[in-house]
Image 1: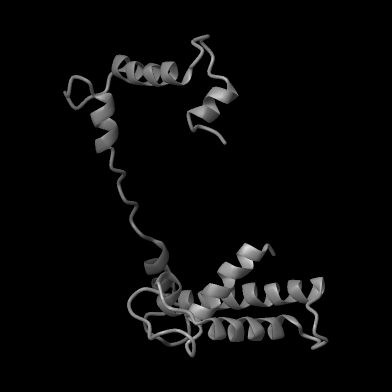
Image 2: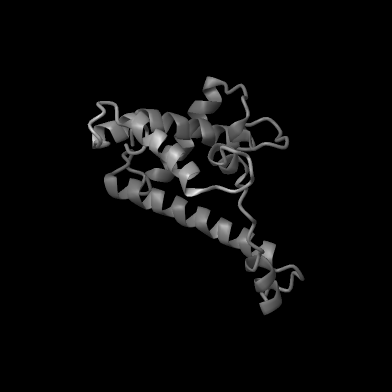
Length: 165
């Protein structure tokens, strides 16, 4: 991992470790600005290194780092799965019935809010968009993107307009 990624990970770990972090409020500790003494940071990182160095030889090999990351991913996925299961199992009997499953998955689709789109497209404000109104706006967008005015929006112009990376 890059040193910056490790540092950010270390800060998150230190902030989320109960013995090192201040008591939690409504937001997760990793999202709160908290003082982090250097000694606590070092202790957390030393403990994290010990977890990575599974054979205790003082070195974290590529294989050990992979195994450590795999354990972390598996643990995180298992925690999410348990939380999801608990959220669906409304009668707390350790089983998900068909009605519990349907309640969890069969949510009515939310209607899209097209208010902004109508405001841009409906030039005469009659609450209907005609082909002429649609073309007027879309061609204006095309013309804005076509910086060299050659009738073609090149990939460079698309990038400059934020359409592609």
